[in-house]
Image (cartoon, rainbow, N blue to C red):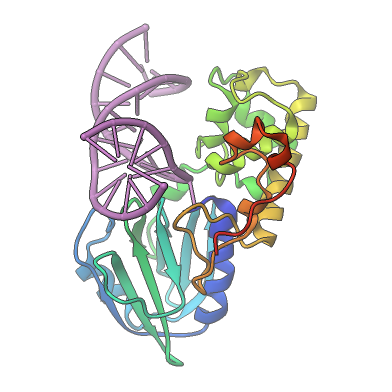
Length: 256
DNA sequence: GCACATGTTCTCGG
DNA sequence: CCCGAGAACATGTG
């Protein structure tokens, strides 16, 4: 899935159904690459927990429970966290049955997603290595992140240690909107360019959130529906449209 | 069969 | 140790 806008959309929607509810039972597994915390332990930890809040760090979400423990999850490329009971199709890794007759399901075909239990007394290396969140990135913080970097500005935007939350789609969109070539040396941007880029990143991410994110293939909101921001892309997924001005001037139809 | 896919992490070379 | 490029991870789709 999912870059910051898609993850933020899921966060907000999950919170609406999950907050204040207790996990009464859970189906977790089978073991795979997907589980940082083994399914058997994860299940023991999850059942009985009541959700206080869900926080987002770049593209990573962390559920905070009443007892202080946390549940970290990442949607990877094809993760879907929905507020319904999905049929077991071999790609559903987690089903949570909540009080109030609500059910949550986490499905991920490619299993690049991750789920991990974080004990209340411990830190999470996964969170600690993330750079500042892109949704609120200041011009100054972006400049600090890019300073001295020899790599391309596109690669720098994708590096979650420098700035967290931006992926392929929004890196392309933000650079295009800023009129900065993706192959420019990251540390070579002028202060003015950096300022324009920081503004574009924030603005585009916010607009994408307002549209429920971008659906390219797998991403869905918690109600199972696609996002809409893909129809507003100026460059991502539109290589052919660039050389066909009559097509590029209008938005494509939603996929469904 | 081939190329490619919204992401992260590990390896290798400098 | 730092940095950057490319491969690997698992699976589906066009």
